[in-house]
Image (cartoon, rainbow, N blue to C red):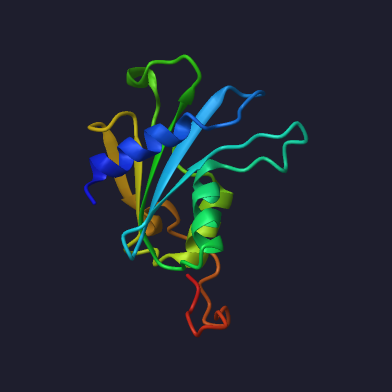
Length: 148
């Protein structure tokens, strides 16, 4: 799937965000290795800690459908009522990055952070988490994968 198409889906996912407190809408489109795409949006809560980012929403939807291998995620965020041209690049938070590390190869998994379909930055997860945890072989998943 082309980056612009994945970004277009992330833009659509923003429309479903539940953000009564911040008015900051985030949409994500996660491309699984098998070609399926899972959309996610941020869902806020008055208690704050139950709030979930769009990236994790997309991951949890995919994982709950049995998928474990992913290649790319597109993220598009901005304040409600703001034109896309004034959006800033919104990179995933630390919690989202850690979830990505659990399921993705840091050297190959791509994160597209977009201001529009044509204006985006592409980074690998390793570029966003150069000193990531866990990196020790003692952290091995039950399926034999070394988590990194």
